[in-house]
Image (tube, rainbow, N blue to C red; front, side, top):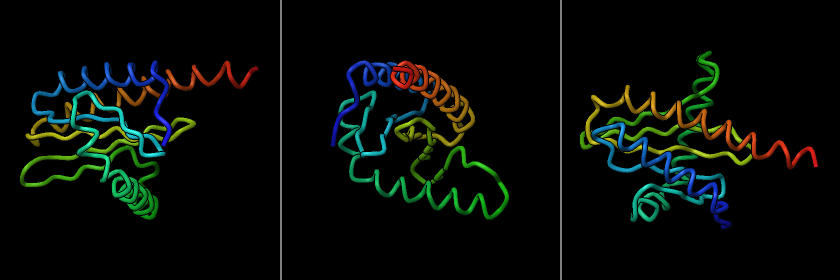
Length: 138
């Protein structure tokens, strides 16, 4: 399992910290890559989420299949609302697929969290697409 390049990890860590600061009840935030590498904004989050990355990918795949069957077009996020908190998973479309994962204590923060996650996904897509473009041209 190869780790993300340091510059990408630092970018993710800063963006995730900003996301958590913007959502009052955020308990944990992470970016999960396709090879199950985790970048989180807090110590211990990666260890807690690591065993669940395969299940998260399975949930997203099921959500995409269901959304397509229902005519919902592309799946932008998956929200699991539990009695002890809310888990939001947002796919990011880059050359190396990633998921943004956010855990909330308060379901009233879902709208704020979604807005922040959509902004973060756009920033990641823009940054990683721009970083990959020079490599393709070479």
